Each structure stands twice: as structure tokens, then as C-alpha cells.
Image 1 (cartoon, rainbow, N blue to C red):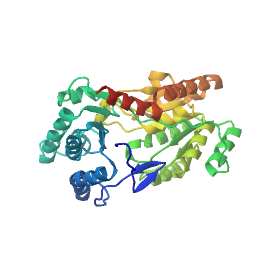
Image 2 (cartoon, rainbow, N blue to C red; image 1 turned 45 degrees about the vertical axis):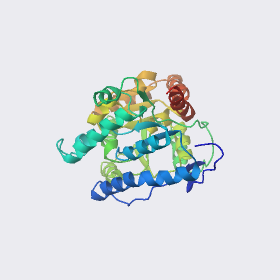
Image 3 (cartoon, one colour; image 1 turned 60 degrees about the horizontal axis):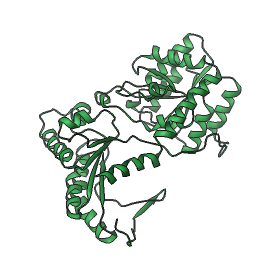
Image 4 (cartoon, helix red, strand yellow; image 1 turned 30 degrees about the vertical axis):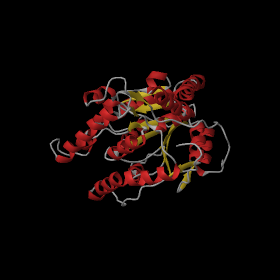
Length: 365
């Protein structure tokens, strides 16, 4: 924004001002979601124009959205104000429609979205993306060479080992497991279909069948599959799994520090060939915990930084093998793994570093 003008936001979240474009609410992926996307895309231009008139002319516009339909409004605003425009890509459209949504490749919506995708790549001053291997695809769709930068999800550095809210039931349970000399594997995140937690239960069942009682899985979070996962664990007598509801992030970070390893799994998907950037992975690494990385994707930060073990999300035997491997390591080796992960996060994935990366790109254009 131009200097000398005060930005008056509608809402502040963690000190960051937000303004909201009015649209319709919706649930699921039906017609109302598409309607909401359309209203947002059409309303964005006049809404942002009014805010710019109130607060000052922007020098850089970053269009960051799960869908591309509002890019045209953002580009028109950039042209009007003489501003640079960056496109941040979190999901590849229309590939997401076809490969995840099951929309036929020749559907008119896919065709129109493809036209917009090509327009956006050709007319952005720069494209940033969470997907580390997306550049070749974007080049085929019209993105000029040298106009792509990978900017992953990141973390804020939070000191480990704090005792804030140490009375929380989750932390009390972990402390009890520690006293029992259990090897604790924590999963903190969504309990949904994409998270492939059924194979974690398969692994837990296999460990019990082997008579291995010193490993305990602790699952923290919410999701549409949680009730069925809990019912299955109860029915099969999986005493080596504890379930906890979603808690404040400060408690989760303490819980990670009390555990021996973090667990992250994602159901295989065709779009993972472009790579992934899961927030929870950086949280585990920040907490200096080795990670059991159960994901099949183009990138593997755990292998890259040597801070855990990897397994196929569709193979519970590999998960068992990975858990047992970590559980049999000396505490010193586990600590070394965790320290390598924390070092990698602090050097490469802190928000201030990622923001600086974007501003360096802007300064060079």
C-alpha cells in the first residue's frame, strides 16, 4: 500500500488484517460451492477496488486461492494500478477437477478452467507454489521459464519443552506412558479419508499379534473417520491406541515433545506426483521428533534430511517395520534424528524466511 494511509481492516487474526469478500455459504462439493466460487470471483474486483481507494494503491497483488477463477479480477486490478501480480498455486486446476473430482476431461467446466489456467500462467509476473515439482507442468501450460519459485508451508519457531497447561489430559497420559517406558508414536491432525489412518490401525493390530506391547500410538484430532476408527479399535481390542480430541496447538507441541516419534500419513493420489508440503510434518520436525513418513509423493523431506523413516501408505508391514526400527534405536540416535529435522526446519521453513524469499523475487522483477 502507499505510505501515509491507514488500513482499516474488518478483522485481525494474530495481528494480521483481513478483509472478506461477501459470498454464499455452502457445505460439501456441490452446486453451492461452485456458486460461491463464481460470486467471489465476480465480487473481488469491485470489493478490492473499494478497499484500495480507502487504503492506498497496491504495488504487489498476490492471488492465492484454492481455485483459479478470481485470477482475472486480480489481474485487472494489477493492470489498473500498475502493480505486479503473483499467482500462488496450492492446487492444480483443472487437474484437481479431473483426477480428484472425477469430472470428465471434456466437460465444459474443465475446458474453461484450462483456458483460465493458461491465461494465469502467461500473465503472472511470477508463480509461487507449495508443490515442488509443479514447474514442468506449468511450463507446458504456458508459464515462461524462470517464472516459478517453490515456497512451501512453514512454521513459527516456538520453544520446545514448555510446561504451559501441563495439566491437560493428553499431556498427563503421555507422562504416564513415559513412566511405563512405552515408545510413543503421536499422530496430530485430521482423521479423514485422505489421512489413511486405517493402515495405522492395521499396523497396531499386527504389533499386538506379535506380542509387542511396548509401543503406544496416540491419535489427536477430529475428522469424519474418527468415529469409525475408534469403533474398530474398540472392537479389535487395540489397547495400544489412545484417541484424544483436538486441542490447542500449544498443547500439541508439548505432546510432540513428550512423544518419541511423529506419524504422518496421506492416502496416495495422482496429484502427489507434483509433491506435497504438509504443515504437520514441519511441526514434528520443529519439535525435534523423528518422523514416520507414510506417504507416496514426488518429494520426501524425511529422506532428504535424514530425520526419520518412510513407508508406503498402503503397506502396513512397512509401517510396522518403520516403527520397530525407531523403537529399537538408542535414545541418542533418536535425538540426533530429531535435531537434524529441527535444524532443517529452522534453516529453511520459518515463515520469516519464506516471506523474505517472496520479497526477494518481487525486488528482482
